Length: 467
Ligand code: FAD
Ligand code: NAD
Image 1 (cartoon, rainbow, N blue to C red):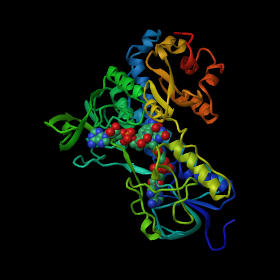
Image 2: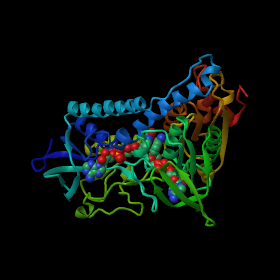
Image 3: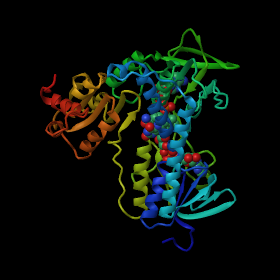
Image 4: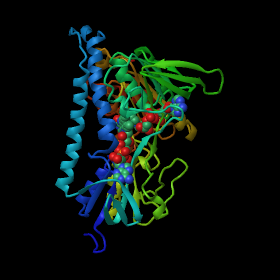
């Protein structure tokens, strides 16, 4: 119950997958809870302009592509697809409406008070929301992140020429030529959407490989697959400026290591070079809370900041900027506030790129694992998996990395049509401390893509059956 002195036991700032989960879990645990959100709808970046709308466009554009590229004809289904971009956008908006409305329903059901407005601290237990002042025993900062700007390349989502991820979800027409700055997750997902719908896509990446942070083999193989699908890459290249004339942009770029510059023209430029934590205007100075060099709020293992009664979770704190990581932290912080033991195992957070095929991983990359000690690796190609072969989905592989001495699985990586779904098995196994032998001797249903995980596990110490 709230102490007399406070309006609430818990006030959560931000209603993204971190904040809304923290609010619901707090309320479920009997704490009097409110959640402040500056957007008109709940769900944060993820539901409004992130995970959900991007997956809506990826799913629909994948149907368009497979209907038209001969894949379906090979299976005996002949169709000639016709793009109705308006209907595709309506499908995206419908998905957002349904899911954000669902969170509003859950707030009501769990008796979470939803407050609309920008929140800023007056002191550690007092927050200003518009004209209102709200007090709480515990305040959870779950303000998320926003697009990192690129100096010299000004985003104007209203004009659809130079856009960030939010603008790239809403393009009213398929651009003829699209240049994506940054071959990370957003660049490859949204670049794939518009390539499938007919754009010529070039990806300019500062590093010498795509998808930083992922396993080396996976990064290389992923680039080969995207290249085969028609995305051009300019690696080790940095964009230094952009001029816009009417509906055309001209980008200036040069080798990352320095050298002669060149230009490239585009009808649409997507700036996707990362995201940065949202702390501006939050009044952190009023409570003496500083951010680290990357602009993040530091917490301890329990998600407490150094200010008593103030907690933080999600994209605004260190760690991968992923919705499910934010949600796990949301549950854990609520449990810790309620006096229970909320824990997040940050060593086992899966990540997925929702392209076709999907690219997924959990745990250490081979490079990271080798730095820690000796490893054994098992790999199995999707081409040798009966279901993938039957479905004409030959691209990709599963790779399992196990500790050489204990056989304990320390990382699993997969490129496969349903890799995002397959990786859940690996995460579960790793949570339970599985060895590669445990996975190799687990019966997997046939015919499934997941049998490739079993075969890769067999390959760690022995010989897979189907190779
Ligand atoms: P957010 O979702 O950013 O929510 C924070 C909320 O706080 C926002 O709604 C903001 O308006 C509000 N806020 C901020 N400051 C204040 C304030 N002072 N007062 C009141 N309200 C405030 N992750 C995945 O795991 N899978 C994906 O498929 C995926 N796809 C993505 C696609 C795109 C295009 C983008 C941009 C991101 C994607 N992400 C994905 C990342 C994911 O969206 C984030 O990791 C996740 O939303 C972080 O959750 P959060 O709760 O920390 O913050
Ligand atoms: P990212 O960090 O994944 O990729 C950014 C890329 O831009 C990197 O490869 C980086 O080297 C490159 N880059 C940086 N500066 C550059 C420059 N000046 N010129 C050229 N390249 C440059 O960031 P993102 O793709 O913007 O995504 C942001 C966050 O959103 C990520 O942390 C990701 O976790 C999250 N997200 C997740 C999903 C998913 O889980 N499927 C989908 C979308 C976004």
